[in-house]
Length: 61
Image 1 (cartoon, rainbow, N blue to C red):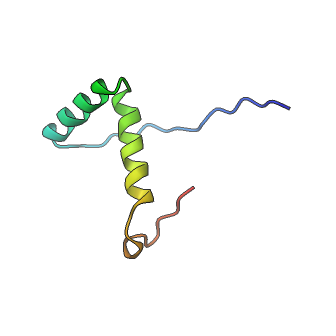
Image 2 (image 1 turned 135 degrees about the horizontal axis):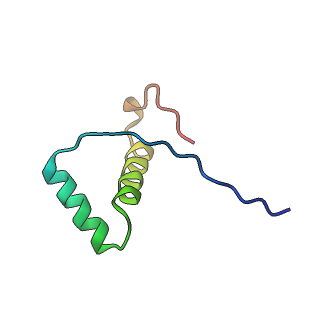
C-alpha cells in the first residue's frame, strides 16, 4: 500500500562566516535550489566522505 512519508526536520541556528554564506547563496541560486537544500547536501556529502579515522562517534543513516 502506498504510504506518504513526511521527513523529519528540526530548526537549528548556526553561525557561518559572511563570505561562506555569500558563496553558498550564489551557488544555490545558480543551481535553482534553496540555500537550505544546498547546506544539507554539503553536510551529507562531507559526512559520507570523511576519512575513516575521522568517523569516531558519527552515525550515518
